[in-house]
Length: 409
Image (cartoon, rainbow, N blue to C red; front, top):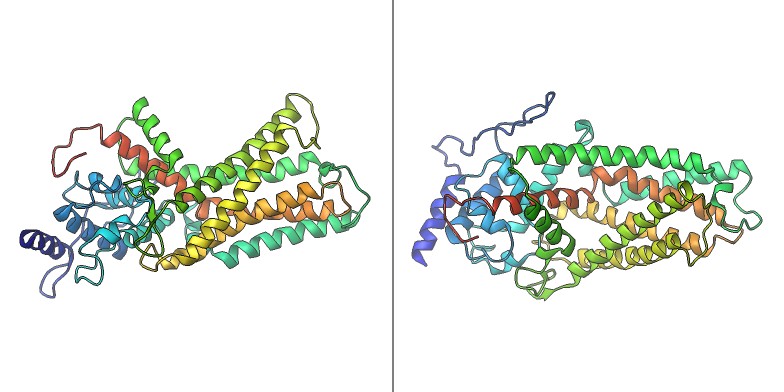
C-alpha cells in the first residue's frame, strides 16, 4: 500500500504545478485534418489538466480496471494529450462505480473524482467540436429555461398561424392534419431543420473522429461497438448490478430509463419513416387508422418517451452532487423536458385528433418537435453520438497490440 501511495503521489506531482516550477501539461495540439480546419489550443484547459492528473493517479493504481472501458484504455497511455482526454471522457458513461470504489476519492487529499472530471471535459468536447463553431457556446446555455422557451415560442408562432388561418377550434376533421398545415409545408419546414441538425452533428463527430486517430475499423470492431452502444453495456457498473446514483447502492434503473428513452425515440422516428413510405411509395395519405404501422409505432414510442424521460428526471434530481457535473444539470433537464413534452403532446394529439381542438394540439406538438430538432446538435443528444464514436475507437484500439503492457485488456 505504501508503494502504491508513493506512485500515486508521484503521479499527482506530474500535474500539480509548484511555485518554483514551470507550468506543466503543455502538449502537442490536436490538428484538424480538414482543409479549412483550425488547430485547437496547444495547452490543456483546466478541466483537461484535471482529467490528466486523475488518469495518472489511476494509472498508478488500476484498481478500477474491470469497471468499464475507460481504465483499460487508460493503461495504453503514459501521457495524456488533448485528443486522448477527449476520447476517454466520451468513453466514460458516468456510472459512478469508480468513485465509490476509489480509495483516493474525496475527502482524500488526492481528491480523485473520475465521473465529475470526465463530465466537464465531455461538455468542453461538444463545444470545441461544434459546427458552426460560433454556435458551440450554445451547449453552455441550452438549459431548461432556454429549451422550454424555444418550444413555447415556436408553439405560439404556429398557434397564431392557425388562428389567422381560420381559428383554433373547428369542426372535427377526422385527424386530417394537412387541412391545417399542408403536407409540403410541413415537409419543407421540418426537413430543413432536421437536415441542419444532422449536418451539424455529423461535422462535429467527424472532427472528433479524425482527431482521436482510431485506425481502420474492422467489421468485428463495428459490430462490437454497435452491440455495446445499443445495450448500454457500460451502464451496468462493470459487474452487472448497475450504476450508483444517490449513494453507493447499485441500481439498474438508470440503464432501464435510458433504454426506454432511446428505443422510444427510435420507434417514433420509425413511425415517421414508415408514414413517409406510405405517402410517397404506396400513395396512402394520412390520417392513418390506429391499427396502422405508423400509429402503432408512434404510440409505443410515445409511451417509451414518457416513461424514460420521467425516470431520468427523477434520477437526475436525486443524484449525488459528486456524480457528474452539477453545472450541466440545466442542459440535462432541458433535453429531458423536450423529450417528455414531445411525447406528451404527440399522444394528446393522437387522442384528440378527431376533436374540435385538433389544430391547436397540432400547433403545440409541432412547436415542441421543432424546438427538439433545433437543439439536438447543441444539447444533451450529442453525448450519444460522441459516446458511440468513442466506443468504436475502443473496439478498434483493443484489437491493436498494447506495447506498454501496463494492464490487461
